[in-house]
Structures are given as structure tokens and as C-alpha cells.
Image 1 (cartoon, rainbow, N blue to C red):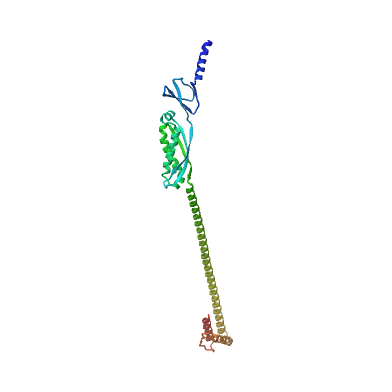
Image 2 (image 1 turned 90 degrees about the vertical axis):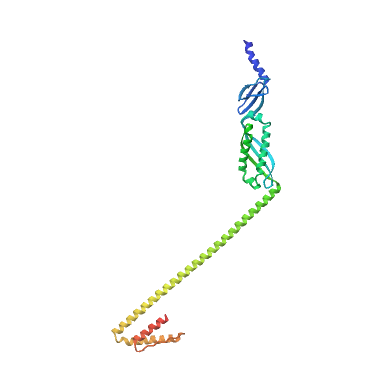
Length: 304
């Protein structure tokens, strides 16, 4: 009984000693050949490989990996030398296909990415390499994914990290940027001065309009005041004439007083007429109060 129990243990020990027992962890894969021909892919867990007859030829990770692309010199469409590097994220989907389809998978992928980057950079001007980086990344991803599909590889992401022009081109770009900044500053200054002049002109125009309106209103007010004053004076003179006419009709004795008052006014009027530059002539009967009143009224209207 002890001999029977010890036989499996001896066999297991022999297998372990010969390396025939393989433990495959999760996220990894092993390829096994039998007599030089692909036989199977070991799944995660414990597996047994028959010594001499079978052997593990490849042990790879199935997780997503990062491929660092070294810097390389590229020529843009406008003949400018730039140095570009990138990073590629990829995953092994078909282990057996990748092992038997291409020798040295990562070296093949690096050369493929370098070739695609040079091709895409040659289609762009220098300025476009900076402004269309995301579009170039998408194109590279599509082209690389299609190219590596026969290898059982899935390219999930491509990113160009650095685009470095040559030192001479950098100096020219910096000079151009400085000139552009100075140009924008000059434009902003001129626009500010223009706006200030426009505001000043608007202010002067508005002040002139307000001044004209004020003068117009003052003239209107003065004219209205003069019109009202003349109306009041005319009413007062008319009322005085009516009162005097009523007094003359009611009291014959008042005629002599009126004649004296009119004679006094007549003398004052004569003096003013004599002092007048143009001079005036009035024909009047000094014995008639009505004639004197008419003459005074005519003189007053001529004066007004």
C-alpha cells in the first residue's frame, strides 16, 4: 500500500523536476508545440507539458502594453526638419497569430510606427503639425490598427508627444511670434486711439447740440416774454384811451384838463421826434383832443 501511494508522488516529483508542470497566471498566455508543430495555448492555471514531446515556445502578456517610439527626424511638406516621438498603446489578442506571423513583434511595430509618422508629417506644413495633432493621432491609430491586424495585435491609442523643430526654425518661429504680438499690440493701440477720438468727437457734437437747444429755448422764452409785455402795454393803452374818452363825454370841464395833458405830451413827443435820426412829421390839430390822441397813438406805434 505504501509502495502504491509513493508511486504517484514519485511521478509528480519527477514531472516537477523536469519542468513539465506549468502554472499560467491570469492575463498571460503560453504556446505549446508538439514535435515542432503548434499544438495548443495554455489557459491560466495548472497545465502539464509532456517532456521531450512538447515544449513551451512563447510566454506573453495579454494585457494592454505601452510601446515607446524613439525620436526621429521628419521633413514637412514645406521642407522643415522636425524631430517627432510618440507612444503607442497596444494589446495582444491572438498570441499564436502574433508568434507565427511576424518575427520580433515589438521591433516590427516600432518600425511601422516610424514609417507612418514620417509619411503623415510629410503631408503637412510646419504650422499644421502643431494645430492638427489630434487629427494626425487619429489617422495613425487607424492605419496602425489595420496594419497590425494580421499579427493578432489591437492598437488602442497613438499619441505624438513632442514635435521639436531645428534650432534655426525655432528662432524663426520665435521671431515670427514676437512680430505677431507687436502687430496685435499696435492694432490694439490704434483701435484705442481711434475709439478715444470718436468719443471726443461725439462729446463735442453733443455739447454743440445741447448749446444750440439752450440758445433756441432762451430766444423763444425771450420772444414770448416780449410778446406778453407788448400785449400788456397795448391793453393798458387801450384801456386808458377808453377811460379818457368816457371822461370827456361825461364831463365837458375835463376837456380842458385833457387838452393841457395832451399838450404836455405833445411837446415831449416833439422833442423826441426832433432827436430822432430819421425824423418824423405829424399833421395834427392842436385844438382837437381827438386829433392829439390819434397823433400820439400813431407816434407810439412808429416808435414800437
